[in-house]
Amino acid sequence: MDFVVKVMFILVLSLTASPPFLVPVLGSRHGQWSTERRLINSWGSEDLVTNLPGQPKVHFQHYAGYVTVNEKSGRALFYWFYEASTLPNDKPLVLWLNGGPGCSSVGYGATQEIGPFIVDSEGHALKLNPYSWNTEANMLFVESPVGVGFSYSNATAEYDSLGDDFTANDAYTFLHKWFLKFPSYKSRMFYVAGESYAGKYVPELAELILDKNKDPSLFIDLRGILLGNPETCDAEDWKGLVDYAWSHAVVSDETHTTIRDSCDFNSNNTWSNEDCSQAVDEVLKQYKVIDIYSLYTSVCIGNSTGSEQTSLQVMFRSTSKMMPRIMGGYDPCLDGYATTYYNRPDVQKALHVSDGQNLKQWSICNMEIFKSWSDSKESVLPIYKKLISAGLRIWVYRLAAGSKNMRGLRSQHSEELDTRFPSLNQASHLPFFHPFFAGNPHLSNAKSALIIDC
Image 1 (cartoon, one colour):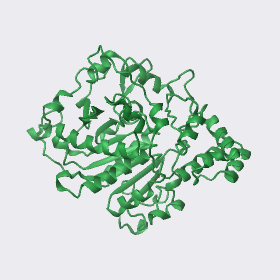
Image 2 (cartoon, one colour):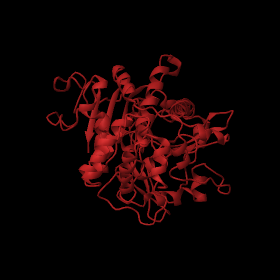
Image 3 (spheres, rainbow, N blue to C red):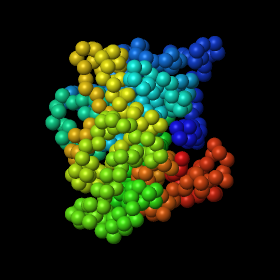
Image 4 (cartoon, helix red, strand yellow):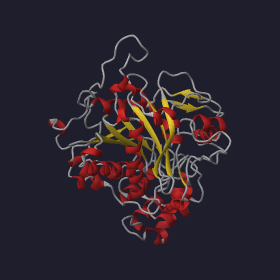
């Protein structure tokens, strides 16, 4: 499955060729680049990771540290940036955000999914990930919002007022301040990517970039967004979650019929219907004992860190429309391995998080943020329409064995966008590396949006 997702990513980047920024001179590790290639000011140089415990030898550089996004409150976001493993100057920059809300892009995206390193089973060392996206792009992982992972605010009361708009604005501020550390990346082709609840973060940030780009001094060369199993439209996402559970024998016909007949997911009072509430509780109960993202793999027995599954029913009622965030992978215990590794003093020191003595308490998800999330758009489909109209590309992919989301973006539910989202199945007659382009006569209604079923 990771291989399929990586192929998708390579395919995406092939759609818009990146012009080389510099011409290499033969005879060095990556080619001999001019001084512009490593145009990194003193702040960025201080963030170079040189002695990460258990790291295998690699031929690329990576950086980790903090970017302060609000001086007054002492609000800072933690990032981990990996150069592309080859020819980093020729390749685009991709920002990756995980969802939750409240889950770590380092703990999930970088450590379990698309980063170059995966934590071993003891949390003692790292191993190379053959499916890392940094083979094709320069990858920037940010723990967002504050309160997630190593990111923090000195004004801890801010943790109770986090929401979509707060997160988008902080991410935007982060980008411009990060470009001060790494100025050569400011002119790169730029993509924003993410999964799950980042299906809201990502288009919201893209919209903000698009609006701010009207000021030439703030211009970021945003080309598109990539989304895995994204949340898009609350009502349709809930319907999709339930329908998938029923069609894959997670819940009974009776439970599915009760939900279909008694639940109005477009209502703000969904859970006031007792029949609906109890039936949805039954769906959530089943998803506490299987992996919502990978129905056919094992769960980690005795691992309490797996998204800290505490009283899911209570959380859903309190957040009304929040979808579950239960992450898994081929090794269902990766959450625990990551937690062990990132709480090690030597690891925190190597990542410039602490001095190795005064440690930060790292967790893979902050459930308090999840429960207190203050604003969440019911649908980001209007933002999709705006991005498409502006000529940006949107790629959406889902995993066949994962049960979450996506219903709001299926072709039959995308009328609001005034476009259809074709799947790769619909585009199978086209050459593999060119599945769609705007103006292709076979996909003329697709504009710049594509769904990929993995």
